Length: 123
Image (cartoon, rainbow, N blue to C red; front, side):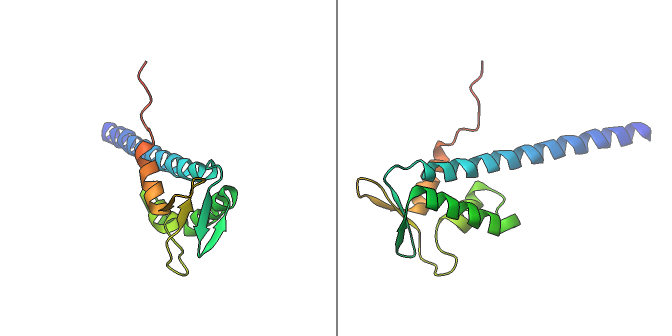
């Protein structure tokens, strides 16, 4: 009976480690997405018709993430609930790059998510 208990505890520990690793990975992806906006030189983040610089945009996204609480568990949730549009007006967020090109922020973030590398190179 003691062996079964020990085996069960080891199994539960492994599951807990896996869940925590997933959460860390998703948090890293979300921080990567926010940083990718913050790094856009000369770009404007357009929210409800008003243009904001990259720093203001990243601050707004961090506030929305905090307000979303447990609703955001993955980077996909972050894009859907925080980074795609206004939760008040329903208007999509836009990003106008320095060259004048404008894209929906949802498209920008989904493309950025594809470039996020979670696997480290093997040595």
